Image 1: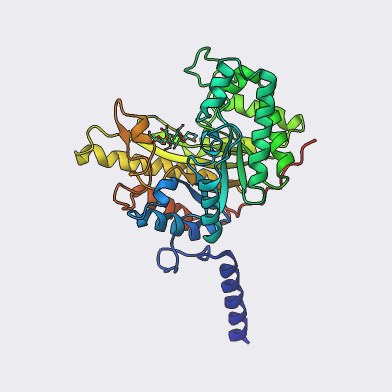
Image 2: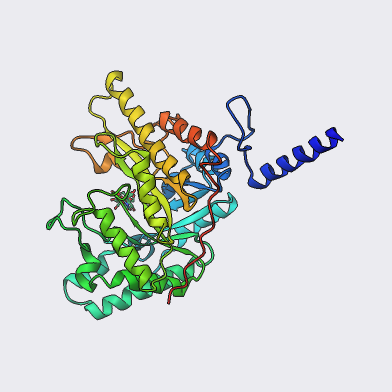
Amino acid sequence: MKLRRFTVVAVTAAAVAATLNVVPASAGHNSKPADQSLRALAARHNLYIGTAVDSAALNDPADPQYRKLVTQEFNTVTAENVMKWESLEPTRGQYNWGPADELIEFARKNKQLVRGHVLVWNNQLPAWLTEGVADGSISKTELREILKNHITTVVKHFKGKIWQWDVVNEAASDPWDSPSTIHYKGFWAQNLGEGYVADAFRWARAADPKALLFYNDYNLEAFGDRGPSDKVQFVYNMVKSLKAAGVPIDGVGSQGHLGTQYGNYDVFQVSDTLKAFTDLGLATAFTEVDVRSHTANIADSNELNPRLQASAYNHGVLLQACLSNPKCLSFTLWGVSDHHSWVPTWFDDPPEGLATVYDENYQPKKAYFELKGDLLFSGPPYVLPRVTQKPNKGR
Ligand code: G3I
């Protein structure tokens, strides 16, 4: 009798673990789960862990390790560049779907969900569009139609294949801009006014009723003083108003670009901020996580080691905060290895780098093991599985 009961319990536990494709939540350091990839460990929490994918690296026959790690470690992917407007429609009316379609097919084969990045952003716009507006050959009325057409065409093309869309990216200014009071900034706000944000969500929803629609931005990790120069407060007010107005927004993406030279935040500040957004009925996600460091002196291990540890700590703060909130649906890294990171080309005076969880030679860094440990050694009662977010139909 006792043996039978034990067998039933064991079989049930094994079945649950198999369903979740996971290591049992009770797995400790003495057990030896078969699959300790990040994606298998994240699946224990129904969390999706991802990376931005550089399509050139993915298709580079001289770099097979890149493809291997994207496949093995991650269960969601984001196009680092190939879904941006300048890539999809370099010439007006002529869409270049090839590279983005390839990534979608790669993800399907590898059972990965795709975050669509990005529908509306002030950067990486095609020259025909920005120059047309600048020389007056594209009027404001026409520009609004062009934006509607772009969103509709792109979202319909990928309909059913995108889990989360970054509908609007980086619409808010920063406190170091002038004026320091946070405001809508850039090309779209200047030409169409702030109403473009609500319009973009409504057009995206009309084109795909099922994709989750996100607002995405950087420096959203933690509230500041909640005053006029607090970007998180501005974004909070914005998404709250959008929801109140019946705009079909489903989530807020916190990019998570950190630097070890800054103070950054503790896990409680970050989890409180996620909770503020999810209390509005929104999902959240970390969408572009990396933690860069100054690199001028890193030949000296006295300089290098503290940076690697600080990077690991900050990756851990963001992941633990995400795990703490069942409506934090995904955690995406911005680049697989330091070899492919955007950081060294963007921050070169003084030089910065070391931002990802694998080094230049694909060796996992302390940050990788931090993520792995956080995923492995967490579970109920404090970490509960993610809950499904239903798309907001809007009104
Ligand atoms: O495609 C051209 C290529 O034809 C040309 O030969 C090459 C020469 O420089 O440039 C290529 O374009 C580059 C593009 O990445 C693709 O590699 C651009 O110069 C370069 O500026 C661009 O950088 C991207 C950056 O966004 C542009 O804003 C980074 O890879 C990408 O990681 C970065 O990602 C953004 C997110 O989308 C939004 N949040 C911030 C994040 C980091 O800036």
